[in-house]
Length: 340
Image (cartoon, rainbow, N blue to C red; front, top):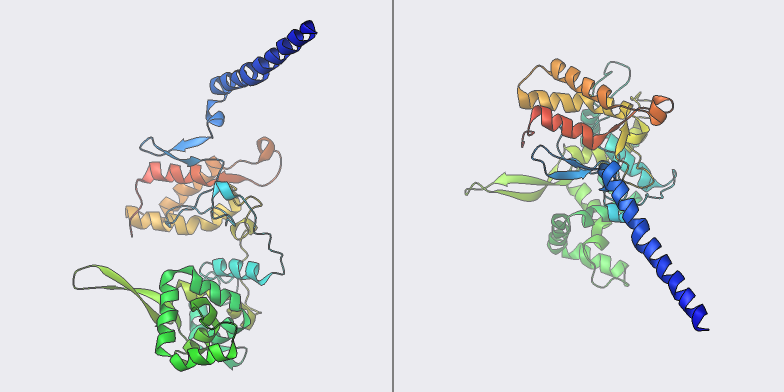
């Protein structure tokens, strides 16, 4: 009996030492010796030598001097990797794609070939007619109340603006409570649709937007005001403009430019996507550096070609570039982007 127990304990001790110490230690030594970059998370460093991110995980870039990654349903949060799971028929997906396209898409043919559609979206919006009916903003909010509520929840400035509006229109707020007895104390998101309906009647061809004003002390204060131009109008109402102009011949954009990956963290974009962004990136760097835009664009095109690679050593599939690697190369070559 004691002999069996001692053998069992010996086997247990050997297994613990082998599986919990020798094996992981061997993997750690091999990883740190032969694959230290990959074993430590494929971390890339900035010009100052400090880590700026992993080449395996996408991250957003806010400046026009940089290439942008694919959209992310996880907001580029590595701890919340996920897809949007939205079907192609889901209006939320169509709206998200349209908002991205509005400010960047161009005409493919016709007298305005190569020109941005955005100015025409603004001109159409200012006329305040959608499919022959007035009050575009009211129609948008009525048809898609979840989008109207999302706008209110997007920013505390938006919800405060709606609350102030409700105080200035007590009769309308009281009528809402009467029509919705289950909501005796409506909050800003509850009033979103009726707010936009009245706003559209009082401000035809305009949309609420945060506008900055410089005070006497030199500080900029943001205030919500009705506006008729801007990126919000170009993005939010592009889809409605498209429905009103179904025959407009528009340029196609790379699919990965508007569609998120399954993880929401794909660090690569297609070379086609990068080349679509090339004009924006190079023109902004040219302004920062006060150099010839054509020369800068050629330089960045060479950077893209140098960093592009396809799967299986180039034997199959599309060419991709790693967004973080390319943006770091731009940073190293051209310096700090303009703060404007």
